[in-house]
Amino acid sequence: MNNKVINIEGVDFFFTLFWSHIPVNEEIIIERKINDFYKIRHKGKKLRSPDFNMLHEESLNFLNQESKRSTADQKVVVTHHIPTQLCNLDQFKDSQINAAFVSENYDFIADNNINYWIYGHHHINMPEIEFNGTKLVTNQLGYVHMGEYLSFRDTAVFEI
Image 1 (cartoon, helix red, strand yellow):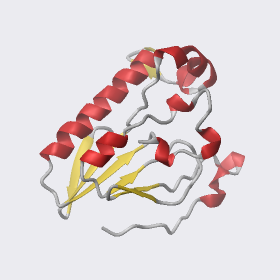
Image 2: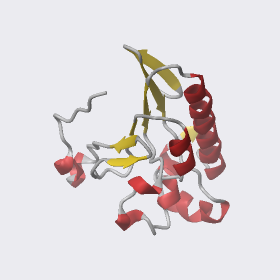
Image 3: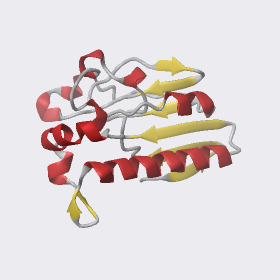
């Protein structure tokens, strides 16, 4: 599900992949080191960084428009990519490929009265973070064959 809003019992859920933004000076190294650029096809062609960035822009525009349009008392954003460096593990923050996983959307989060933001993509779970009233949460299964599932909580829930 991508770029869709579903209202469940008065709560708006915003679903988007929320692709990250890759700076031009990091394109070559990221395209060489990230499997997405070998495995994903976009409009029949090999995925490239400009495609990634266009998809990120579409996701951000979707969230901007729909969050402003929403009249729901509660808002939950669900993304695959990581919305802010606040949710990135220290071990990844200086990585050459970091931009393929996370883009900084600190201001968007601060300005949009979102109750929860559920994210994934780096395959490692971390504690909930609260920023300006938004609870940023994750519960990632990761690659089972690489043992990343060990911190997955199969009974995890949150209440709105």
